[in-house]
Length: 482
Image (cartoon, rainbow, N blue to C red):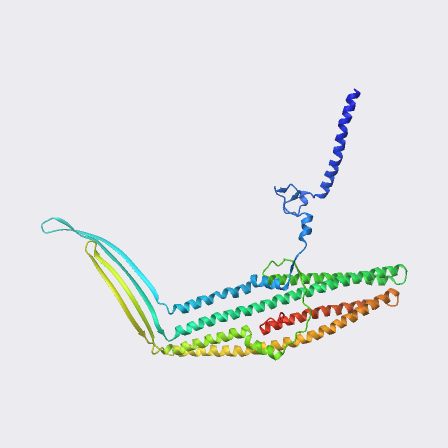
């Protein structure tokens, strides 16, 4: 009996030793893995047996690895916008029409060729009784086949073929200039959106630093209140400042998300896509002669070139209208073959022909005069548009150049003001720590420094935005030139 009890005890010992860690593992696993009803995704039949995560759940390690966003420079954004922006894609698609118009113009010098073929069959029999009283049948199978080939060519159409060819090449160059103008405009939009996002990011960083300063101020006020050197009012005011600064941070966070969403829209990507920005835009003074910029813009801007090409096309249309009083000369070459008759006795016919035709519209009741007058009006309107466009371009170039010089000087002044405000704030914080200043004076110094820093940050990106806009007005990238 003692031997049996000893064996039984020896059997229970490893069971208890094994059971203890298993229950602990079960407990830890139950606390680590949420219940299926709490899963953020619908639970279906598929289950990840290795990590015991429902389908769609991401382990914490993977979440930490995916939290780091991609970094996009302004050049990356411009490249993505040129590839995926819908408006720019439409302009690129419109370029394909130029090739079709050139081929159509070349087709005027190539004859048009047409062919025809016909086949018909008629089965007809008739019965009759001849005078001798015998029933007879007459008729048979009648077939008819025919075909032809013809070529037509207009030799002279009041010189319209010549001007159509010139207009086709002008049209291609015009579309190319429109594409260049659209590209310059899109680059300007992307840069301004990128600068706006950088602005909000810098303002957010400044607000976060100011929030940390407000928290230090709150701790200092609480410490001084604990020793009775200040009243409870200082602590309450410091708490209000912390809460207000947290609201400012929330405002800048929302503004940063909105600016990134606008930048994603220009790039043609998902609006919720998040990324990090690269601030590599030192403020360097750009020195140009405004008269040289105006002269370059009036001659080399893609919009001006495109309008000049449009004017040339309209001039050619006017020439075609004036030459419409001349005759039109055309020629045609034809070949035909046909066979008809009974099946046993066919009748074949062949034909060849060459003809030259001249037509002259002598009088059309002032129709050509009316068309030419309307063409002249459209041409003059284009000339007025060109003058208006040049005046607008010159005005914008001069205006943005003045803004650029003003913003550069403004940035220098604001940089000095920010430094002075920072020094004043440091002195005021030290005076408050020593009890020589009130919290109201400290708060005023904080407000003044926050405004000075905000003005400085805005002046930096206002300068780069004005430089990008000036590049768009000149029609050339000035940001990479300096």
